[in-house]
Image (cartoon, rainbow, N blue to C red):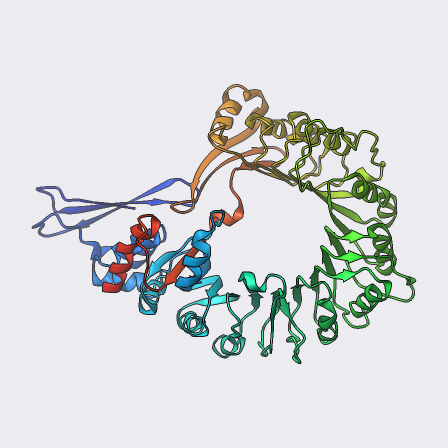
Length: 586
């Protein structure tokens, strides 16, 4: 922020002090002294600042502050709006039609989407003078006219790689989008109105985007006579109607460059249906397909032999699928000689965990890694007896598990059985989300018996103490991985990494003997901040990074509602009114 200037009464030297807040959280003080023949009034000569220095200062301003700064003088206005010094780290720009915002999003108490009212598209253009690039532009609209105007402004001002299309009515804007932005590399489409939840929305046509590589179609019907662009390498398709995938299969035959494919909500419980799908995604039709994900699909055993079907998959993922999962897994193993990863996301029950354990011996023989995710979808009664007392993971489990995730798991017996009964040879990543079953003892075992760990996530788990992360500092010498990143996110009213760092350097100072330790407080934006501890061993160069933020918090997400505000909101939108007025004046 600009702290101002001080001009000595009898001096002929003007001193300008500015303070920049670096992303690392430290302050950088820059002083500029300029000789002046005469100092008549205490007004800083900002025109003497080099443009490069101005840009460095402006890079730390939020959008509201930039609106104020551009009114200081013509030069500042030019620098801020010439696109040579844009608002940094903008990843997503949301554009809302007022009726969508007022009738749906603003009424959703659980939404994290934020928006600021701008009165019209000319005001939006003034705002976009401060933004040159964004990875994704998201359009939330009822009418085609609004969507077209949004696309016009995006095409005029923003460089975007992806556009998300979220209609709340039966509106088809793809032809106009392709006309204005023909070189999009990613497209995400999903109708959001409740009227489309069950039956979805039909896609009448699909224009030929020349550089489209990523396509996500969620709840769209594809029965119409069109082809998906052959440039697509990643396709994610989902529709609530469980036989929807049949209309997609003929279109897949033309996607010879497809590498990643995700299919959701498909009923392939009949062997003939599942067999037709497998033949379609085989190497005869999709030779480059390497990653296949089946999400919430009903599947069955296949009456096919390995020599009948050939596939080039390197990874197959069964994400909350149901049916004859065990047989399907073995079938895909026989079809894919190049498979290196089997990923299973299962519900927290005995049958699912037995299936995962029973396949481990074959995975070890084939040198295939296992990614295992466990989801508990409802709380267990406190009086209920654990179903995992006699669960015994085989020795091969500890030789194939490379990634483990658990969400909302409450069963302590399950964690003791899976995570505390052996040494993990290849476990690289582990993550816990709101797991009451995660205790200090489990973390202690992982710090000692998982030497290959590279990433740990402990998110909103109440049982561990903040000082439990120190155990991973004590075991730094025994780890084989050169770097360990720990994401430790808890309510700061309970504890913080700052307190953990103080405990480390005072109460547990012997743990950092021969090591260096640093603490950083980071401010990413007005609403996003974080703390970080970094410890590294001098001799080996091994490091432990402990943080309470994720990578997404480093980036900005902006939202604008284009149109008159029907009801006065004295919240954040009111605070931004002054900015928008100033942007209009400029």
